[in-house]
Structures are given as C-alpha cells and as structure tokens.
Amino acid sequence: MNDNISIFPVHACPKCGHTFTGIPALSREDNTTLICPDCGIREALASIGIGQEETEKILDIIRKYT
Image 1 (cartoon, rainbow, N blue to C red):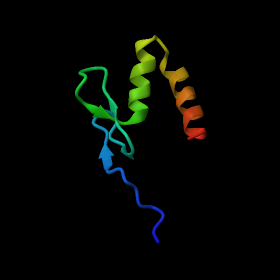
Image 2: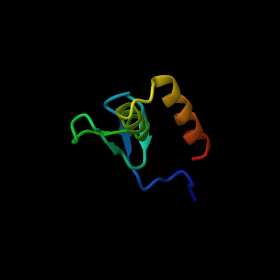
Image 3: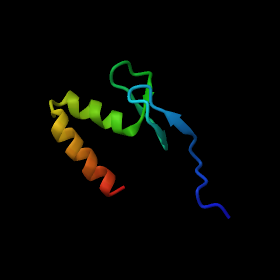
Image 4: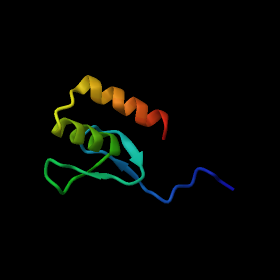
C-alpha cells in the first residue's frame, strides 16, 4: 500500500510559484485567486502590519509544528 497518496491535488501557487497539496488560501488582494497557505499567511500578517522578517519567523514556527 502506498502511504503517499493524498486526497488533495497538487497546486502551483500563482504568487510564489511553489507547488503544494492541501487546502489553498483565498488571496486578500482580489478575493478570487487561490494561493498557497504560506502566501495566505504572508498576506494576512502584512494586512496587520507585520514585517517580512517577523513573518518568516512565524512561518518557520508554523512549519515546525505542522
């Protein structure tokens, strides 16, 4: 049995170009574009004034525990 089977298709993020599986995020920029979860987090944090350096630290912590 193959344990690498995912019920989610592989997507390419139009913002960063990375591929991902799982549930996409809806871009805050146009409310129609589906983007990768990382870009969704980046947009959300930018909307509340969190800088890029702090955002990357937050993403590193999220990745560590997911």
